[in-house]
Image 1 (cartoon, one colour):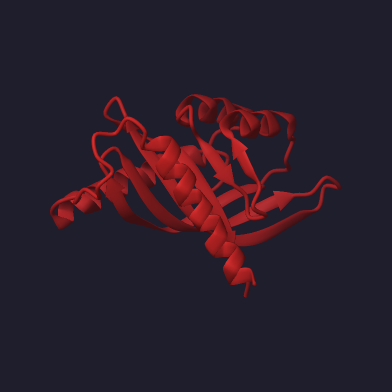
Image 2: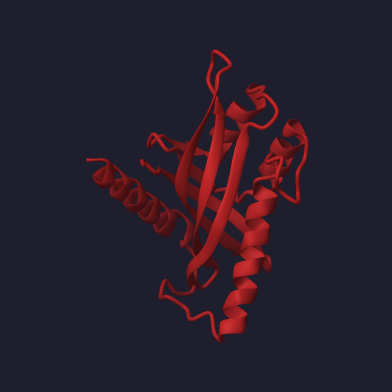
Length: 173
């Protein structure tokens, strides 16, 4: 049953990503990245974009104070950005920014990604995955940690790769 849920979340993410973010693209065909070094360069560029996006993580190279990070994301994410939570809830950029502005998490709460891999490039749209330890705080102040596999989506706008969405699938051990 849990595998079925994960498959549904990824299917919804791919469907939403392809329908909303690929509008206006010249071609929806999978574009080869090119030579191995070109692919490695793009993977590093997208990993860097991912690290900037996750600026609230205390372990990242682009760490910002929580409120400063939220305002950075508001500018950095594409206008069509969306995220599917580990529970299957879909939120738009506007909804996520509003929820983050209202939150006051404890230090250390946030995402801790690793194992980033470029999976596919479709013109100005790219898909990557990573493994993330997500430290969350409940309404009663308790901090818990879950592990998720994340499908990360990026769109190239004005020559620069920007976060376009994510789907988080819990890893059950």
